Length: 293
Image 1: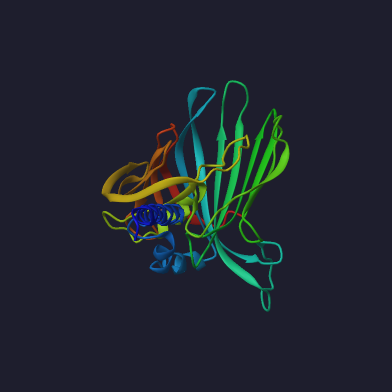
Image 2: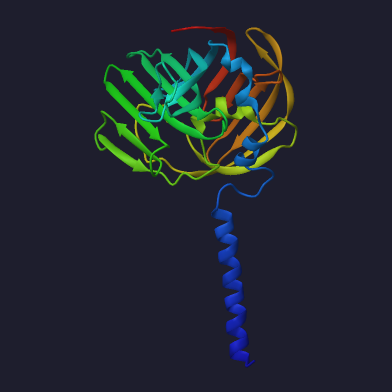
């Protein structure tokens, strides 16, 4: 081999190595401990019979969020319930169910009303995850209502390429659709209070994946997949409105946020506390199981 050919071969080897490294680095989920898909395969949390009792888990939280550059205190309700989706419309099916093509999901409703000096902000978010694979989000809708107007967003994950359909009252936003390169193992922030309950909790459990930040806002921006490192840091006592609850601390780190989600050690692992470096907070205040409809 001539010196020139040897040099070219060396360059090609280096470039090939870099390409393989970069493709591997970009392919979610990243190789760091377990992957969301593997965690789903190891978890039967969603199949717990508690979700078959015909009732909903209704949890009330003391909440905080910054609005108009001021921290606001308010109440948020998280409702978790099993539903059978009709695959014809991807909405809750009405009986009779026999002979119909259905998908069983767990629905998380997040209900908030935030008072300000101007007017109240109202948000209702519904997240639907596959009961058999709670890390897989199927659908999400978010409605914002305030005196200036309405904004509505819908994440569609069942029909073709994942996308966010939106209707905004803001100039330069209006109505439209953003396509999302969401792959198996990628997560929406808004699904985490239900999906993370299915984790096989143990200290040091970690994985890295892609992440889309919360859509619970009155504005629409292009959804952006960012890197997120998730770690179960350990078991801690959490002070709540119903006493001290031993809870697993799950840390989420992205380029712009550090978040902590605490989930009760006892099944079905309800969210007991949440903090985010942007000022958002939740602390469990009350919980019950009942029919709210």
